[in-house]
Amino acid sequence: MIRSLLRRNRLFTIGLALCAFWIMIALLAPLISPYDPLGQDMTARFQKPSLAHICGTDSLGRDILSRVLAGSRISIGAGFLTILLSSVVGVVYGGIAGYLGGAVDEIMMRGAELVQAFPTIILAMVISAALGPSLFHTLLAMVVIWWPNYARVMRSMVIQVRSNEYVEAAKSLGSSDLRIFFHEILPNSIGSIVVLATVDFGNAILLFSGLSFLGLGSPPPTPEWGAMVSDGADYLNDWWIATFPGIGILTMSMGANFIGDGVRDYLDPKLRHEV
Amino acid sequence: MFRYILRRLIFLIFLMVGVTIVVFLLSHAVPSDPVVANLSQRNLGDAEMVAAFRAKWGLDQPLYRQYFTYMSNLVQGDLGLSIRTQRPVAADLARYFPATIELAAFGILFATLFGVLFGVISAIRRNTFADHFLRGVSVFGVSVPSFWLALIMLFIFYLGFGVAPGPGRISPRVSPPETWSGLYTLDALRMGDWALLGDALSHLVLPGICLGMFTMGLITRTTRSSLLEVLSLDFIRTARAKGLAEKNVIRKHALGNALIPVVTVVGVGFGNLLSGMVFVETIFAWPGIGQYAYQSAKNLDFPAIVGVSLLIAVNYVLINLTVDILYGLLDPRVRYDR
Image 1 (cartoon, chains in turn brown, yellow):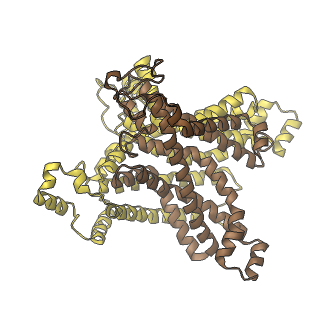
Image 2: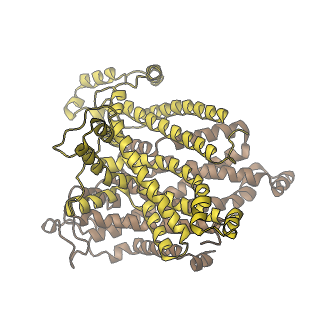
Image 3: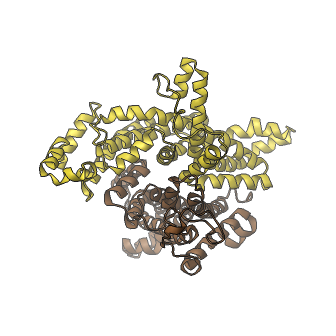
């Protein structure tokens, strides 16, 4: 699938390259960063981009390039964990609702709909503001608002898969509900969840950096991209402080979105011949 | 159709109750305390001050009592007092909402105009450079963080070239129009003050673009794929076979059908718009609901948080209901009652 996507869709290739680039950076950050991302140098504050500091320095004289490189680890990690945890919660929740059906299903899905209709950003802001600034709390807030999508997809997949004959067969052989769920239903519904997760990754990075911009991420010295852009907002004339971390967010989420678009187009049979 | 609308309105009531319960539970499940967030350090050391604060805001009552008091006030249209601003929440919302409506309308207008335009060009010129470029633009739209875009645009167009006005709804030396609708453009228009209208409009451009960027990307993508799908259908082949010019095939036959799914995206886009509002309003010093929500959340001002959440949730449901109804009217194949 990946090979045929690469052949047909140039934008998908660009996306793959961007993501590979950032993953490499995240892995190698401590080795290749020219300065200590937390190291302050009061004699070198607000330096324009130069050979010594390719992306300039911020209000505490910290090297912005080193901080952007270090920030990639947090962004990728946070995006990945949000998606992973949300999909686990969603798969379990949607799986139970879809498998049991009836009134339980109805009540559970109304609950999920409630979370979805709730203004997400407000819920996330309240949770992180209430629990105090920390990476863990931000992740918690994101998972709380993120899982319902996965629950809905999982539920509809389960309902579809449940009616298949091989599930009937497993039942008549006396398999337990749990066994049927893990051996028959889950393997046959996980594909859609993976697609949704791919398409969603860019959005997760965007929301995470947004919360971090609002001061709801880790406490200050941590090199988070969103928080760095927020630092730069106070010194608009020193454009480099906000620009470079922002380019980090933009390129990573563009990479994820190019991949997501490619996968979506590939799986949509109506568009398949067009891409 | 009627039964569908009724069902959605019942869901709306359920949703409103749900929102209040969620915020109420949250307000007590969290370790942090509105007393700490709203009293000064010195007053915090004073046990009497703290007790008075708790008694004043009913924080010393059991949770279910607080909830019933709140709900009985709510059904009478009273949202309570904001802890932070000390004003009735309903009055606060009424004061900040028009600014948000004005900005959101501009944002969605930008998003729809350019999204449809880009999507159509992209589909017609499929697999050419223009298509690749515009798809890039659309992915840029859904990927760019609005807070960063806002800063960059301010830096370039306000500080750099000086072609755009700075943050705020109108220029500092201009006095706002007398309040009628609360939308500065409408109010200026009503007064016939063209200079003021121009000033208000120019202040809408940058924040409106930042706000609409994400939705623009979504609409471009939907328009493109939907138009491509329609163009592959039989009736288009017929239209082409009978010798219609390609221009007319697109304009008269394909476009109308292709735009039906776009209506839904505009509805979804409104939801995204409201999230973006928090960032864009903060950076552009726009006195709207987004900033109010941010300040309320930061200060754990729960009456205000419930108020804002209700306002947004109700708007969201009503907008999506409107979209669903429109969808049913536009596409005779869609039937909501089964």
